[in-house]
Image (cartoon, rainbow, N blue to C red):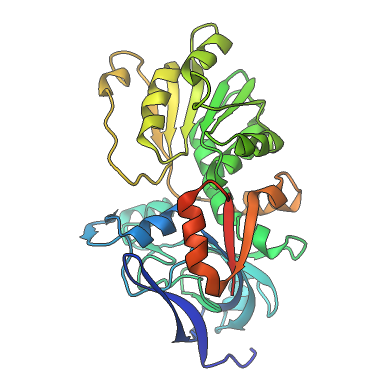
Length: 360
């Protein structure tokens, strides 16, 4: 174990729109715990939701904010192992200096869902950067507590790309929830960081036709590089009509919503075929109102939610190692930790960036 410094630079969330760069004690590992020197951390839509102070409804408790301030945010990250608690190296196959990631949720291991192996729905729901047991990685160091799910990362993957493991893992899970078959027409709404990962994962399923939707033509071009057969811009064409034309009037078989905009939900319900599968992944910032009758009486749809990234980190790491995504086009901004406010504003604006990362 190297000698860790006493303090570090960290972004501290004190409440909605009140984030500050501060000195904070460097965490120390207990038995079975790991401390990494953070190399790269991404800014996610859910980080933005936390920043704006949207309500949190996780587990059995309602809290006033999306996260439990004061807390260090950041759940998309990679870092170099700097300290190992007793038994941690053997447990996780990690050694000093290795690159490592940790799944965004640290399951309690005791609730109904954890006991059943459905750990991503853990009732306690400790997620890095949101809950006080799991401070996040917008800092120079972060600790993986006991019970964390940790993985070694090949050093051939650039660190800014490795920070994309978490969103890519989520994207893979959403695609798995779609039950895609070879003859399916699949539509993925949204070509942001999550949607692009979904396109790449859906391409591995090899559907008959894979369509990306986005209001940004540049993102649609990146979606094609990820494996989309075509991209459609809802601001320029009637995408429901276009998909119906491409499917003899039936509609798409699978629709995955990754925009975070209520209009995309209604759009998907009209676009999807009878007996189709609708996958909802987005972090919505406002309520969604739709004609619920479409789901049952009209189309008898399969509606699947998708949450987090169970059992997908090894797949995500392999996809990045194999170069299956145009990561130089997806990671558009690499900034110093001190520029966290600028990074958050870039993510909020959404027109000049895809994935924004910070380097402590």
